[in-house]
Length: 192
Image (cartoon, rainbow, N blue to C red; front, side, top):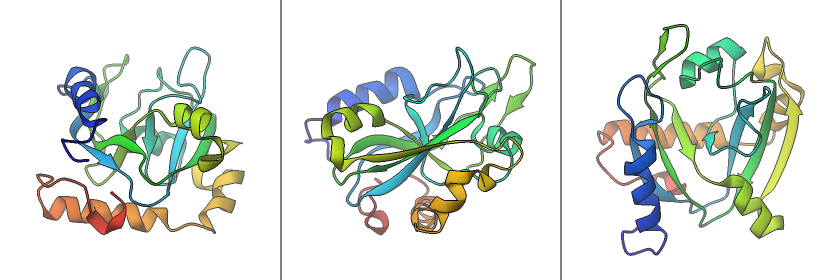
C-alpha cells in the first residue's frame, strides 16, 4: 500500500501501536500494510467461551492443516486464547487493505513459549466490517472444526478442491523470504 493512500496512516499507526510486539507477547514480528490486487481466501479458526470469536482480526492466508495442536504451534496460538472449534473462510475483495506479516512468539499461561513458523503469513484486518459494508463482494463460509484433523473438517475438505490460495500465498512468502522481507509486499505474484 502506498504511503500516499488515505488508509495507510491509520494502519501504520495500528502496526506500531498494537501489532508489532516483543518476543513472548504474540502479535507480529514483521509486518507490511498491503492492498489486495486480486480476490483471495482468508481463514479464521476460532471458538471457546470468552476466547477467540468469529469476527476477530487475526486470519490466515492459507487453509488450516493437520491437527488443532499443530495449528496452535504453527501460528503460536495459546490454548487459553482459542479452542479452535470452528472455522470460517472468507474471500476478501480486490483493494481490501490489511496488515500481513510473520507472527511473533507467544508465552502461554503454562509457561510454554510457542514460536510460529517463519514460513507462514498471518493477516490482521477487519474482515467482518468489510462483510457488513460490502456485503456481496465478500463471501464467507462457516463450519465446525474437527479437533483431530483441521484439514478433514467438512468445510475445508470441500473448499480445498476449488481454490489455489495456498500455492499463491506460499509463492508470495517465498518471494518475501528471498527479499529479506525488506521489500513492500505490493506486486508480489499479483496478490498484493
